[in-house]
Image (cartoon, rainbow, N blue to C red; front, side):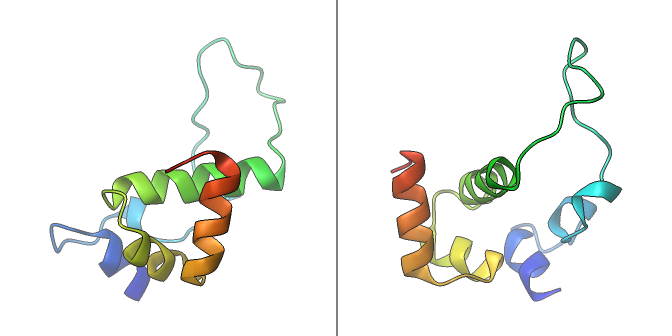
Length: 84
């Protein structure tokens, strides 16, 4: 809940703020994407980190806290993704 509260800038926790295992989330695929498409864990991690970072207005401290990782870890991962 703490992570969800950090992500909920309006003060209202919504489903997208909760950490729900990816298998339980509805598929978000383009209409022409194959239903058999499987993402690697690295792709899922990258997507989740970058989306969280963007959602938190590129605030690295809040992003690291929301993700439950160290700030240096976040810096390293964002650098490897080419995100400033």
